[in-house]
Image (cartoon, rainbow, N blue to C red; front, side, top):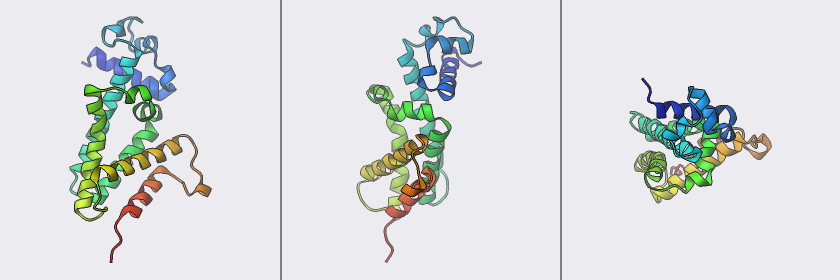
Length: 191
């Protein structure tokens, strides 16, 4: 049987997916799981705490997805492309949750265990980038700076696509295609 707090998280995530952050109210979440409108307060202090829990759960899911890719027995560059594809797919399939994780200043201001959960997806990507660097598929520069550049660039591509701001005349036809081009441009030139 699913615990009540998990049912509340699932309902909040579904409401986010269906109607954006504005659709997530304590009353709507309670109604979605068949509880009284005050019952969720026994599990979450307020709406912000509920949204933080959804974000923390999704950071954990991204971490797990990237860790699974990292364990694949394929070339490091292919791992990186697969991890970025998973990142892009998450942004496309869950745009409101993606904005919650990566564009909400109140979420970014959290510390402690939440901050530790939020950094884990980045660290998994950094480990894959390091494998690519060790295989000489990416430049021998600071791993954290290179990972930051890749992570931020792909985030920008996801955001542009989600906002409907990609245009062929701007050279942007899709987040996945842009991420592939970025990785190809970062590859060291062969002599």
